[in-house]
Image 1 (tube, rainbow, N blue to C red):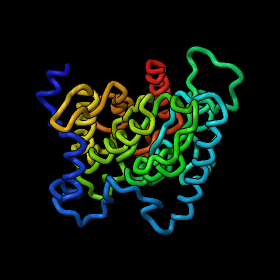
Image 2 (image 1 turned 45 degrees about the vertical axis):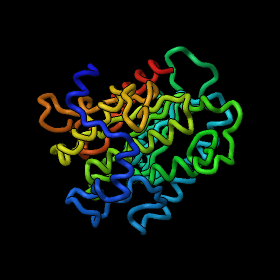
Image 3 (image 1 turned 135 degrees about the horizontal axis):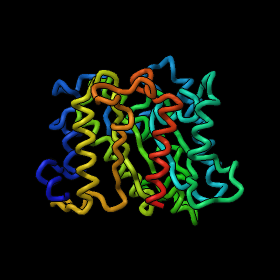
Length: 307
């Protein structure tokens, strides 16, 4: 499998990609320039792309930080799910605002990753998880959140390393699950910018929690396969990096066995695979409670193989 992947994947080191983005030899924008609304995927960005939503974004961010702090007061999480609205809606809210039918979403979420306060004891097939998402977030926004308050157990500064990780928390969580990138497509971001942005977050997490496994969920399909070519390319490259975790280059090892890729594309397609299944993805982007039930069960089963 690795030999086949090597024949079809163009693997660059993260250093090469980061330098390319920084120097402009790898464009942030699909038109080959850097004048689109695409954010620098390597620079943390706070707040919403829409200034009118900044207050809501901040409120959602504060909720997430509170939940992350609460998770440190109990036994370690099996999985921390991080992302945009697709992750946030698992808990029946968007930009921190609760849906009218929140109960339908929470029932699915609590059965899959029941909040720790609902657990008195643990069985072998249970997964303790926490979903932290914010609607509309781009890769740069998630990077900001990772480094500024949403990391369970706190974050050590990568540059100064003055703040040590809390004792005994290096295994909390055991798995990071990332799903981000679909909103960057709407900003005319190039496929290379999206790829390097996601891989950069993986690298940050591997440095901060070297004992945790990082799972990157492929970008989900969208209605009428909009952005389909870019989504497929990014997902294919992410799989390449996961499959070739032991590849070395002149700049050294890229990743290790603690990096995994999960492709959920097939879960959301109709029977003839000509479009998304609107029964479980009614707006062509976000799962319904029924869609989340299918999706979260697959996540849960995969996490069980890792913990």
